[in-house]
Image (cartoon, rainbow, N blue to C red; front, side, top):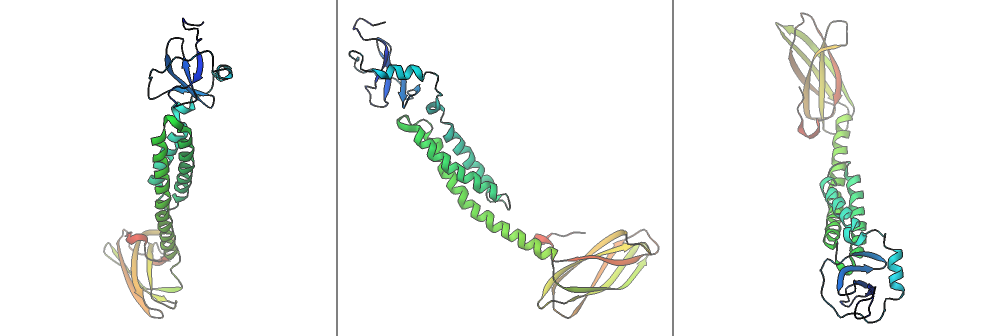
Length: 260
């Protein structure tokens, strides 16, 4: 219904030039605005502009009626929110060994969605801050991922050295029980070409079996090639007779761990 000025309520060119269209309710401009057929609320509020004359909206009113159910994406800007969340996740996990892959993916997605969020923010600026945070944290996540790759390589090298100490030969020289204390003595020969570190796990077993009743570990550092190096381990035990066997020989324990 037209007002006293003969101007019907409807969508007209935004007199404030912030959006494509703004809704005029017949007496005043409102905060209902539209860009590209998407309807949302002007976050900067309402400023009174001149009353429109005639019906300059033309097809714009019809366009708005057909898009009245459109999603209010400019108000929520979900892409900006997703970018910010993924960027924070990227920074949190990208430095972790192996998990770095997931962190790098999150960082790339944060950058991509951050760019989308900035574009969707448009003139209103809705979600622009979140989108920028997503871009910054995403880029930072990629930088942190470099550290994650380095740590992954270090961890792989350390465990490879632990699982594969190099060629060697071991021999148990003596195995005896004194009271409640068992003692095993033996030698390890480094058959490699350079100095190496070894960790020898000795088992104290019932005679004629190979099921360890107790175990003890000897750590040998900087063993020179070709030279037998002696080791000795002791363990509290509850058997009167025992045999001593070498259960396994590994490299240096990862990251200085000490196992009993």
